[in-house]
Image 1 (cartoon, rainbow, N blue to C red):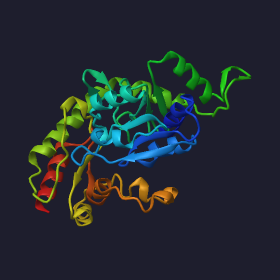
Image 2: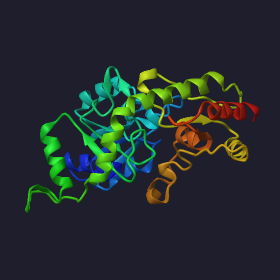
Image 3: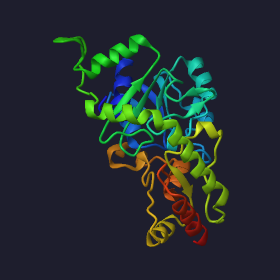
Image 4: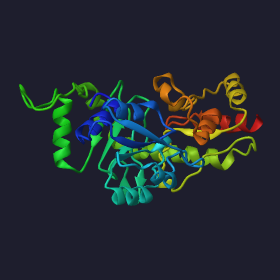
Length: 306
């Protein structure tokens, strides 16, 4: 499909939930996750993350379920797979669909399965900065449900199951051939690149000793592909400026939580303290398979000197 947002939007549309249904979604995520729900006329219900993993906290989901709840949309944020066992139990208990936002977790393995192969369907993004990225926008849907797959293919193609025959009110969402060709070349290198990311993350985690820094926690090494190496610190802005002066570029994923965005003014008086704490203190250090050893060591040295 054309991009990661389309992938999630198409999945939600294909499930044909009655209008106004509720879908559980993490409060700590990129806004695209939430847009895919509201663009289908449904209500996103926010659940706080675990402060240690930044992923949705499964222990807080059940209290948010109502008669209108139809699905749980998990996000494998920053490249770490959500701990899915509790999610599956809740979904089974309440007969809910499980949708994966796997936009940041290409190649991640959870209990011997890849993310994108865990729930009922998953959406991936191939934006250039992703672990598997093309040279522009791109995305895909994965599912083991053949009927759902055929329906999504049709909806993404103007709602057409064959030429000039339209059975759904669909979209035009296709992956350009040139982007597909680029991805086809890069895909065989994904696991090798992810392993290099793990090595860099291991070095960061083993050598950053500055007590002002909170390092990311990992449930299982194979479950994390380190799309982003996100640290936290109360002195985030000062640290970012300090790193910039020393020739190290960083980013903030993300500076403003979804419930504080103008697009969702109806949530402006709501408080999600864990998410807000993360968004105020998070900072992403450089991580990429192409980083050189001297660059990795410089990052550690500069962070430790802060």
